[in-house]
Amino acid sequence: MTRRRRHAIILGMLARGFAVLLSCFVCACAGSPPHDDASPLGTVATFSIVAFDPDTQELGVAVASRVVGVGAVVPYAKAGVGAIATQASANPRYGPDALALLAEGKSAEETVATLTAADARRDRRQIGVVDAQGRAFTFTGERCMAWAGGIAGENFCAQGNILAGDAVVSAMADAFRSGTGLLEERLLLALKAGDDAGGDQRGKQSAALLVVREGWGYAGGNDRYRDVRVDDHEAPIAELERVLALHQAMFRRPRD
Image (cartoon, rainbow, N blue to C red):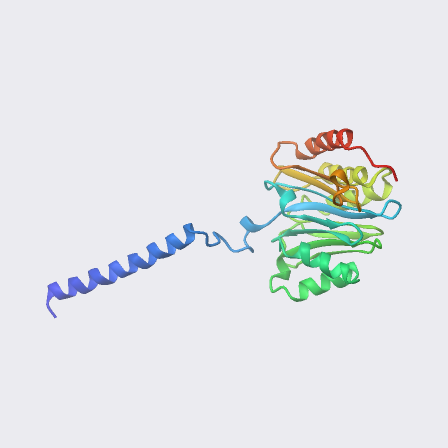
């Protein structure tokens, strides 16, 4: 084989290799996932509480995190059915699928067992569920980033990952148990307690609160009674409290 022929073959191989790399780059830019959902970039590091009020039948979720727009990912709730927080390497299907399972009559624990059994990445997931009877269950996968864990009690469960420590969820649980007033106020109180105990060890960015009750949404047309979010703020929980106060003033509690 001549030197010119060898050079031609080598140049051809290099050209084909470059074409493959260029194709991969174009596919990535066109919408392929930039990272595996198991990576820290795909982790919704957060602390949350889901709860039920047996007196009013309201269900709700409160959440805070060092990611932008946590309210668009974590909380799900449906009046008369249940409330869910899905986080860590969050599986967005957990929200609607959990509500469907709860509507079929499964308990919170049965719902979590069903969801995680079918999920190959369950060891990276975290979920908290409360049903419309107040039964609560929280699950933390073994490979969630430390500190990660949760507490389940009567009518609520609190959970979090990449936290300052277990004191965060303990403080949330204590605040909810001892709190008084409306469900939205007790949820916010628990969120503030978790933040005071250290919260997300990376810092603060967003927070959200969702409370549902049948027929108590806007103009009575749905169940989203309180749905307020702070997507990006240096003090998101304090800002959430301010926005909630505005919402309460504008949309007053309907008569029972």
